[in-house]
Length: 248
Ligand code: BV8
Ligand code: ZN
Image 1 (cartoon, protein in one colour):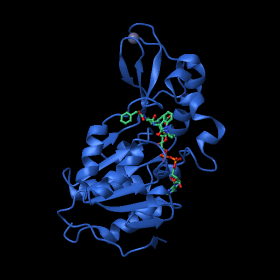
Image 2 (image 1 turned 90 degrees about the vertical axis):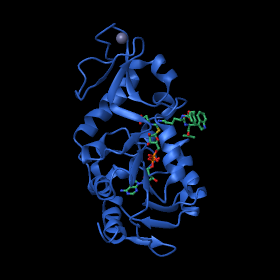
Image 3 (image 1 turned 180 degrees about the vertical axis):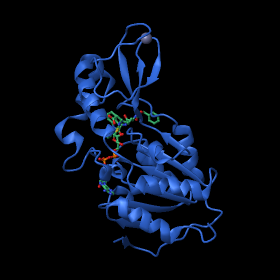
Image 4 (image 1 turned 90 degrees about the horizontal axis):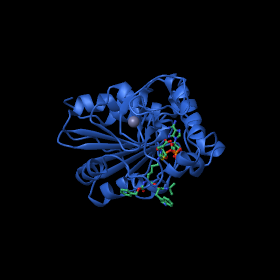
């Protein structure tokens, strides 16, 4: 049951450009552990120990053991109704009417059918060579050798994700989308990691109508036009059925 805090519910107009930003919460109901929840990944590990370039150079095997474990976990996970609803929104509004920015590296949005998509923190299924730049998409779980070596030059391969201190990918497209959105959906993110966490503020300041979907309030809630609390696998499909444009 959708718990709408504040304001009424705004419908999507056929001329609207809708942009969505997702975080680990959109994949939680698929079984992918979030980062900062009670059972979060960062509870058991310290991000500084694992998700940084210096951690990798210091102990590539330890970092790869963590990513190999996560890849094994994610390989069993399927897109949930929130991922599928976002793919349906893209289908309904068309490629010019919808754009999805995700912080997630699990690939579940792509698996659900989303194509107007930028994965600003990278993709756990890609890896590249630290020396010659050879890059590959690899779904092998578990990996036969940790850390994996480059098949071309023999140097270390690294996970295809963006670590703390590294520049997120596609931020030019993400910033542009936030500035031009008529409606900005913020889905399953604690809003603590920058520059991703800046996107909803940019959209709000540019006049977008902001709708937040989460289990609980976050720093974004204070300026969101609508805050919809509940498991997003239920709240997002429910919201979409009420908000979708009439003629589509
Ligand atoms: C950058 C990929 C410069 C790897 C990740 C001090 C020192 C050093 C750096 C900094 C510093 N202070 C600030 C920084 C910058 C730093 C940063 O923000 N640190 C934070 C922690 C303070 N950022 C960076 O370093 C970034 N790079 O700044 O470069 C720059 C700046 C501008 C332009 C160009 C360059 C790089 C950040 C990327 C780091 N990589 N991951 C990997 O995955 O292993 S971050 C990691 O956190 C994930 O990507 C994750 O997506 C992301 C954000 O977390 P969330 O997705 O929000 O997940 P979380 O668990 O936190 O929250 C889940 C939410 O879902 C909760 O609210 C929960 O209530 C909700 N939820 C749960 N279940 C459900 C649900 N909601 C609905 N339904 C449910 N069922
Ligand atoms: Zn190489």
